[in-house]
Length: 388
Image 1: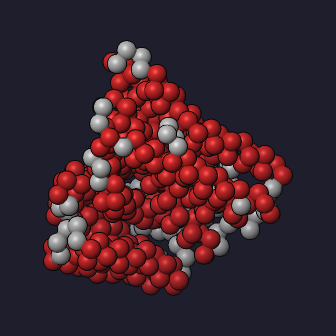
Image 2: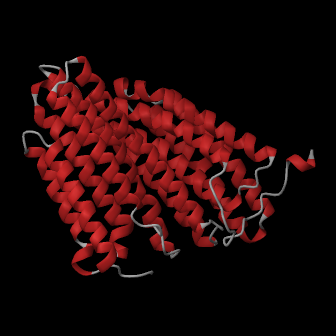
Image 3: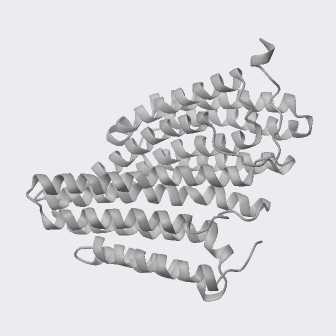
C-alpha cells in the first residue's frame, strides 16, 4: 500500500525535459468538453439577440472551468508524483469538472448553477486534499499549502451563499459572483507570499500553450460548420468566404501566440501572476471567436438570423479577435517589445474591434489580423526588449 502513496514532495525547478503527463492531457479532455459547451451557449444566446446577458453568462461559465484548470496546472507542475492516490484524486477532480460542464446548458437557458456547484465543490475539496498532502510532505511550504487548502474550503461557503441565496441572473447575483471570483484570485497571491511553490517554467509554458490550442479548436469547428452549411446550400459564397476567414483566423491566432518560444521569460512574482491571470482573456477570447463564427453562420443561413441584425454577427467576431490580440499584449508583448513595437498590438486590437461596424467584418478583421501577425514577426527581429 505504501508504494501507492508516496510523499507529495516538491519537484525540481530545473528538471530537464519536463513535459505534460498523460493524466494532465486527460484532464484537458474534460476541459475541452466544458469549453465546447460554453462556446455553444454563447453562440446561441448571441444569435437570439441576448448579447449582454450572453457575455455575462459566458464569462461566468468560462471562469468556472478555466480557474480549476489553472490551479491544477500550477500544482501539478510543482508536486505531481504520479502515485495512485494522486491519480485518483485528480480523477475525482475531473468528475467534478464534468458536472460543471453538464450544467452549462441549464446555466445559459435558466441561469441555474445548482448542479455545477456540486461539481465545483467536489473538485475543490479534492484539490484541497492535495494541498494538505503537499503541506505535510514539505515543511518549508506548510504555510503556503495551508493557505491554499483553507482558502479553497472557505470560498466554497461563499459560493454556496451566492448560488443558493440570490436569484440567478440578478444584478446582485452577478456582483457577488464577481466578488467571489476576486476572492478566488486572491488566494494564490496570498498563499505564494508565504513561500513560492516549485513550479517549472517550461512545463507551465507548454501547458498554457496546449490549452490555447484547445480553445482555437473552437474556431476550427466554426469554420468547418461554415463549410458544411455552404455545401448544403449549394456552395454559398458568403459561407465559403466565412469558412476561409475562419481557417485563416485560427492559423494566424496560433502563429501569433507561438511566435515566441519563451512565452514567460521571467519568474518574477508580479509578472508571473499577470501572465497567468491575463491568459483568461486570451483563452476566453479564442473560444468566443468560434462562437462568433457560428453566429455569423446563422445570420447568413437564416433570413432573420441574429434577429435580422448582421452587425451582431460582425461584432461577435471582431470583438473576440481584438480581445485576443490585447490579451497577448497584456501577458507578453508589452514586456518583450520596446518602443513603438510594444504599442502596435493595442493599435491593431482597436482597429480590429472597429471592423464590427463594417457590413461584413470577417474579411477586414481577418486581413488586419494577418497584418498584425506580419508586423509582430518583424518586431520579433527589431523590437525585442530582452529578458526581464
